Every structure is written in C-alpha cells, then in structure tokens.
Image (cartoon, rainbow, N blue to C red; front, side, top):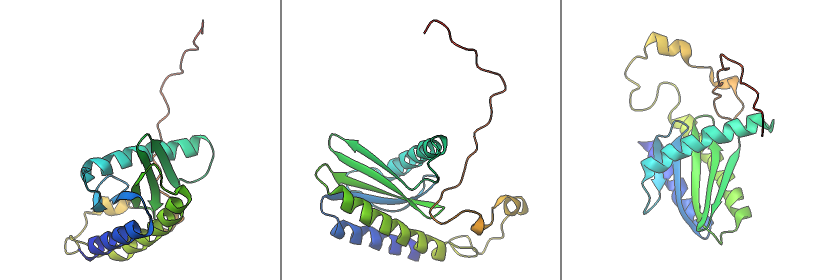
Length: 173
C-alpha cells in the first residue's frame, strides 16, 4: 500500500509542475493500475489501452531499429496523451490539454517515470508486496528473468512468432 501512496503523491506533484496537465496514470506494462489521478476517465480502461499502445510502440521501435522504447506521444484535437517507460515493469501515462508546453511535458514526464520506477522497484521487489507471505510456485520461479537482464527504462520483449507459410506475392497492384 505504501507504494501506491508514494506513486499517487508523485502523480499529484506532477500536476503542480506541469500547467495544463489534466490527468496522470501509473500502471504496470500488463495494464494494471498502480495509481491514478485521471478525473473523468476510467483508469482501468486507460491502463489497458496504455498496455496495448505500448506493445505497438515497442514493435515499431524494434522494426525501425530505433533501440529500446522510451516514450510515446499521441496528439488529438483536444490535447496530448504521452506515455513514458517507468523502469521495466511500469509505465506512466499523462493527459494534457492542446496548449501544453510539450517540452515541459517530456522533461517532467521522464523525471517522474524514473521516480516511479524507483518506487516500484524498492516497494515491489522480491519478497515484498501483498502476497509476500505466500511461496511462489516453482514453475513460476523458473520463468522469471533475472532483474539485471535489461537496462533500466526498457520494457520486456515479446518476440513475434514467424509465420508457418510464405506470403504470396500480390500482383496487379
């Protein structure tokens, strides 16, 4: 519970540092809400959409050979949705008005993402959390990668499977 409170405090401080920020959400890369400050928006739905967009963004950076995912910015007619990596297991999504200072949004979003990553790692590390008293199943322990395998700020990789057939060339286009 302390992690949720600390992350929520960070989200509230973020709102005071960025004029025209209308909401913020911290979630796991799987789409589960850690903390939110998004009035008028369903946080669970936003977290799920963030996870879906994250998967597409990761594949785009990989396909374009642009390195590890760092951030995603979407601009609509009513404002911005910005998503930042917050360590390897969390993500920060910010909602802002159309007239927000985008440079300030990026600066503060990156800083808060790093702070949230620290809070999540220290608060939810091995042996902590709600289910710390329960032993982990052995088959789960074998699939958990070591924490040092990926650099900080990168997200887990889902490798797409190769198709079992060769696509047919299209003619007449």
